[in-house]
Structures are given as structure tokens and as C-alpha cells.
Amino acid sequence: MSKLQIVLLVLVAAIFGIIIATYAQSTNSANFEEAAEHVGEKYKIVGTLDKNVAIQNDPIVDANLTIFNVIDANGKSQVVYLHQDSGRPLGLERSENVTLEGKMNAEGIFHSDHLQMKCPSKYNEEKHEM
Image 1 (cartoon, rainbow, N blue to C red):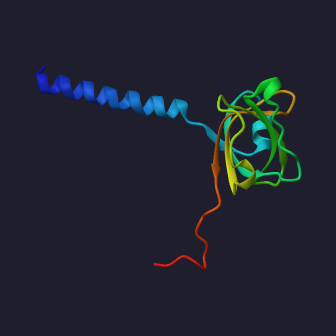
Image 2 (cartoon, rainbow, N blue to C red; image 1 turned 90 degrees about the vertical axis):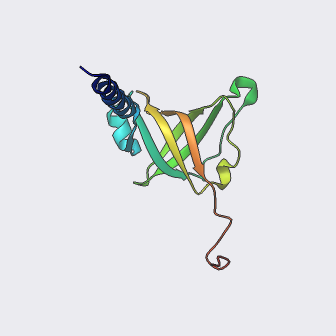
């Protein structure tokens, strides 16, 4: 076997390894109902902050826990426990939508370890010029 064939074989094996690792770490997109049907499985849920329910964060008890409600694409409002080392996310109240990654527990609470917010655009239709 020549050196070129060995290098190509190693390269192909590395590519397969990367593909398998990426697939294994991917998170299923769902809504809260689907997450509740599969307790303990990690899901990605996109929704909006339920502004009818107050955001809770007590830095004395647990500065890394923020509790709030999110409305998913099906209109279901769900309690979310966000566990982040950075504490309460800044701008959560002003976000257009949120993307959560986490797991539903047996008690029906969605525990998230990652939150991504889409903030309102600083450009609107009237002011946008080309």
C-alpha cells in the first residue's frame, strides 16, 4: 500500500468520524408536547417569552437559575428552568423569540442548559434603505 493510499484512508476515516460526532451531538427540534412524550431526551425548542408570567431569579438562593415561561409554536405555555453559569440572561424581556436546548423531566418542567435569544431588529421596514 502506498503512502498516498494510507493518507487517503486516514483522511476518509477522519471525515467519517467528524460526521458521526456531529450527528451524535445534534439535537432534535420539537415542541413542549413532544419533549414531554420523551422525558430525558434532549430537544431544541423555539418559542416566545410568555410575558403574562413573571421571570423569577433569586441570586441569593441560586444565581445560575432563571425560571420563566415560554410559548412554543403550538401555543403551549411551559415553565422553563434555565441553568446558566452567567446567571439571568440580559434582554430576555425584549427578545422576539428564544431557542432553548434541554430536557423535560418527569414533573413536566423543561430544564434548559442553553438559551439563544433573537433580539428585536434595530432596523424596521420604514427606515431600511438600500
